[in-house]
Each structure stands twice: as structure tokens, then as C-alpha cells.
Amino acid sequence: MATWDRPSRRLAQMSQVPASEGEPHLPTGRELAEANRFAYAALCGVSLSQLFPEPEQSSFCTEFVTGLVKWLQLSEAVLPTMTAFASGLGGEGADVFAQILLKDPILKDDPSVITQDLLSFSLKNGRYDARARVLICHMTSLLQVPLEELDFLEETFVESLKETKEEESEMAEASRKKKENRRKWKRYLLIGLATVGGGTVIGVTGGLAAPLVAAGAATIIGSAGAAALGSTAGIAVMTSLFSAAGAGLTGYKMKKRVGAIEEFEFLPLTEGRQLHITVAITGWLASGKYRTFSAPWVALARSREQYCLAWEAKYLMELGNALETILSGLANMVAQEALKYTALSGLVAALTWPASLLAVANVIDNPWGVCLHRSAEVGKHLAHILLSRQQGQRPVTLIGFSLGARVIYFCLQEMAQEK
Amino acid sequence: MDEDVLTTLKILIIGESGVGKSSLLLRFTDDTFDPELAATIGVDFKVKTISVDGNKAKLAIWDTAGQERFRTLTPSYYRGAQGVILVYDVTRRDTFVKLDNWLNELETYCTRNDIVNMLVGNKIDKENREVDRNEGLKFARKHSMLFIEASAKTCDGVQCAFEELVEKIIQTPGLWESENQNKGVKLSHSEEGSGGGACGGYCSVL
Image 1: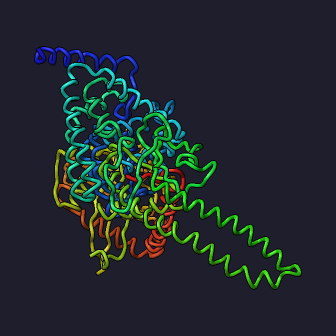
Image 2: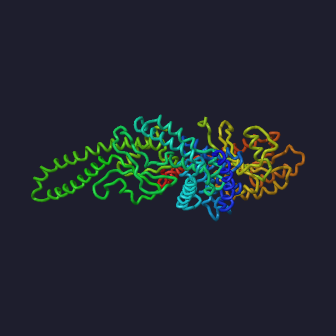
């Protein structure tokens, strides 16, 4: 019975796709005149070489441009030129390319077509490279499109992906079962991650994530942008983009202690899903208003999907208290300083100065030392989680203050070493 | 290898559609000839190192498309060029007549005025010549350009054309030395640009 259902459903999809293509008719990069498609690809190449001049990024730049030439159906003959652009030659002409694009009849009315086209291109393999996003931001501003437009487009993509997920029917049931199976696997992996922690685990996760990308995804997204995502390929892209286990970062919980870390958990700051996420890392906690990890981030609005990292609350709280003690101690000291100028000055100075300094040193020393150490550990652990793509194939922005910034520093360092 | 290269020169090839710009370049860089060469899309790019008077120079040659529909793209390549090769077809008078338009464009878009220009009359292997050698020479003199007649098919004058152009550029020190300085400025500028971009709001990782 299942075998009967399948072809008919596939036929229905086939007839659906051209229909949705015809009705809203989203203009894509491919519909531009050849010269303008050339300018578009060239501008991307030049921008890439400006944004990522480092030699280790050159393979990404070349691959991106080569893919884009195919995507725009430009002749293969332009490849050497595009590669030259991507390797930093001919950058003088960038503004001319931008001007040419802005004069294009399609782009004149709606320059965000390029943003959308680049977004579809970048997502076609079911992953969203952070570098691609940087390029899209850059191109968007070159074409004088407000960056909010990009946010809006990303949201549209997520919405259309969501719709396809809700449509999930008997046909997708098999794949879901597979996914559940995988979820079980994932749990093992997480435990493995917490105990082993290192390169081997990342290798395994990478291999698991790969088959999720259906071969047809590229063609389906490509033809009509966001509108044509009504298929199982859409689900595959969705799963790949938003982490395989479905639960994402919030689902991540340490089953076991990793090294010296006692607490490590992602708390959602905002409801919603987006193509890029933000992880905020708090530097210290204090009694009162800033008691919780999320408190400092209430005004954070970088993306619709934001998390904050809860780590070592006990020690961060101690640190915060210590800081408070110091602050009040400072007030005390100021008062004592003032006393110095009174008749009692000699007495106060002789007795209290060294004692208060000593006290301060004691108060700060312990929690600070512990937090300093833990922040490095947490940073490394965060690096492994990000590298194993718990967040899905999406760009991540890390924001942190104080020791949170230290976490980020160690996270980046660890990631650089792993790669 | 790059260390003994004196300088990198940007050379531009312009001219009407079908006069043989790409063929000249192909003959020069790869020493091949393809009578059925497809029209260039946008621009083609090739690098070749040549040595003139014991000086090695790396040539970055931009071969523009002559077709009208790609004309809008051409202005983007003039910037920073030290040498321009202007090509016409000796068997097609119309390509010679239109040289004035190309010179106008050159004047409009070139960023420097001491740029070295060279006029090349291509396809001299063909029988039905419409433009006399003297006419070409006169035109080149009038606009103070170098002049040579060549054939990409028989390899006549091709190497010579590029060598002479490079020699002239190297003899004009202000031309390529200032370009080297420009490069230094450019480099810091691009760094500045990317740094600014990172601060401007996107420092995503992964």
C-alpha cells in the first residue's frame, strides 16, 4: 500500500511546484540579463576576497563563486575570471558592479532580489555558512537594502520550511521513525560527548548529519525561492538547518560531569526560530535584579532565536557577591579615607588599611580563581558543542561580558585548534 | 618566484566585437588559436609573467567583451590599468572607424593620464584588407599610441605587441611605481574595510 501512495504523492508535488512558481512569480537572480548576472557574481567574488582575505578561506571563496556561477547559469568560461575576482584581483571595479546592478530593471524596483537569491543559494545544501551570511549582509548593504529586509527574508524562509514540516504525512512517517532512531543515537552521542569530549565524537556527528540532506533540496529551493519549498526536501533542509535531534540547544543537557564543569545548559531567551542564533554568555551573577542568567539580556534583539548559557551559577553568584562586597568595602574605604583628614587620621590609617586590603584580597581570590578556570573549561566545552552542530547548520553569534567574554575567547581558541 | 618579479601590471584589451581580442590573448598566453572561439562573457582574465630587458613583469590581462550587451561592465576594468591594447580588424573598416568611441571611453574612465596605449590591427593574414597599414599608423601617431599589425592566427606580431607595451610601461617609472604605492594603500584600506564590517554588526562564528 505504501508503494502505491508514493508515486501519486510525488506526482502531486510535481504539479504543485510549477503552479506555485507561476502564481507569485518571485524574480530570481537567474532572470537578470547576462551582463548583470556577471556583475552580480563578480561583485560577490570581489566582496568575498575583501571580507575573507586570509589564505585559509580561499577555498571557501572559490567554491562559493564556482557554485554561484552554476546557480546563475553563467557560462563555464567565466570561471577563471570569477576565481581571479575571489582571490583579490580586480577589486577596483566593485562599486561599478554595484552601480550596474542598481540600474537593472528588475533590481531597480526591488534590490532585495539579490539578497533573497543569495539566501536561497546559500541554503540550498541545507546548511547556512556564517561566512555566507556575512557576505549576504555585505551585499545587502552594498545594494542599499536595509538589513531588516534580510531578517524578514530569513523569517519567510523559516515560515515556509515550517509549513512543510506540518504537512508531514504517512509518507514522512518512515523518515520520522528513522529520526527517532537517530534521536536515541544522539543521546548516546551526547553522553559520549560529555565523557570523551574531543575530535572523535565530532567526526561521528558530522557523518550522521550528512545523509539528512536530500539530493533534491537544491533544485527545489532553487527554482522559485521560498515559495517552492513544499516538499519532503524542504523537511530535509529544515532538519539539517535546525539540528537533527529537533530539540536543538535547549535539548542539550549534560548527562554527566565534564571535567570540572558542574553546570552547563542553554536557556531560551526568546521563543521562535530563525536561520541564525545568538548565544549570550553572562559574566557574573548578583543578588537582586541580576540574579538569573537571562536578566542582563532582556533587551537583546539580535535574532529571533536567542539563548543564554547557564554555567556554574554557584561560583558566578559567589563572584558577584564578592564584587558587591568589594564595592561596599570600597565605600567603607572611602569613608575611612575621609576619616584620615580628621583628628582620628593617624589611628585609622595605622590599623585599618592593611586589614581591609587583606580582606578584599581574600574575598575576591577564591571565586575569581575558580571562575577564571571554569570559564576556560566552559569555553572549550561550548566549542565542542558548536562543532558537533547541536545548533544545526546555522551561524551562531556569541555575545558575552566579563567572564562570559572569556568563555567566548576560549571557545574560539578551541575551535581554531580543532579545525 | 614572485620575488624577482619587478611589478604586476594591469593590461586591458578593448575593441569592437569580433576583432580578435580573445584570440590575441590566447595566442599570447597559451600559444594556441581557435577559429571558433566563443564570444567573451563579461570579461576574461589571464596572468602571464614575461621578462623585458632582464626585468620580470607579471601581467594581469583583462580581456573585455566587445559585445554591446556587456558594454556596461567595461568601465569597471579601466581603473588602475597601466596599459591598454586597442584592437581593430584590418578587414573590417567599421571596427577602425569606431576606434574614436573607444578612445573617448578610455579618456572618460581611466584614472590616470600617463597610461600607455597601443593600437593593434589584427587579422593581417586575411586577404580582403580594408584598412591600410598607413592609416592605422597615422591614427596611432595622432593619438600618441604605439602601433603594430598582428595576426593571432599566424602568431605574427602578437608577442611583440605585448613586449613593446610592457617595455614602454616600465620606461615610464611613475606609472608602475605609483601603482605599487597604491597597492600598499589599497591593502590597508581593505583591512580597514573588513575590520569595520566586523564592528558594524556581524561577527558571527561557525
